[in-house]
Amino acid sequence: MKNFFMNMINKPHMARRIIFCVISVCMMGVCIYWLDRLAWGTDPYSVLTIALARMTGISLGTIQAIYNSVILILVLIMGKEQIGLGTVFNMFLVGYSYNFMGFVMDKIGVDYHFPKISFGEGFNAGDFAWNVAAMLILLVIFVISVATYMSVELGAAPYDAMSKIVFLKQKKLPFRAVRIIWDTVFTLIGVLFGGTLGAVTVLAALTIGPAAEFIEVKIKKFL
Image (tube, rainbow, N blue to C red; front, top):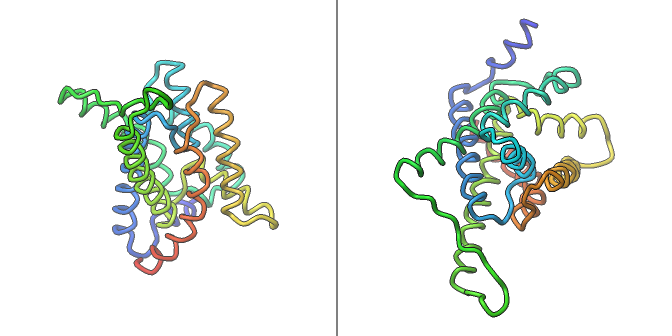
């Protein structure tokens, strides 16, 4: 057990890894807040947790903390080597960054939602272009943030750790394929609970895995 905890903090350039990890998970929460306001879907995991938050009336930060804690039990049993400081950061900072962004907007008196798009007679090309631009910018930042926190190797969030455990327990599929399947399953569960499935959900499910593999190479060179 002592070795387990020592491995959590005994890595080269630890301070640099922690800074990258904290910034990336906080940016994930901020991006999810605005993607939720866009209403074109969020990442697969947030589709489910946002649906649960709205269904129960509990804040997203608290829902994610509870949900991650349940999955963490499975990770500790099946592959505790996936656990680290980054696991704790992700369990709490993503959801509560979302809440904090909402708190800030409430304090400054702004409740902005992106324009709703209706195709047909009421179609507004300007609103559509604005939504598409916002979606692409937020999605790029979000995917890079996810890939960065995964690449600093401080431990994965329980949700992500389970996808890695599934990948390591089979030899046929590459990680990107396992991740896409994993995200798709959770997206469908989220939709069943009333979550929003949209273009962002599909694009996130298809890009997080490949982006993680690409950015991991860049991050390791920097570290």
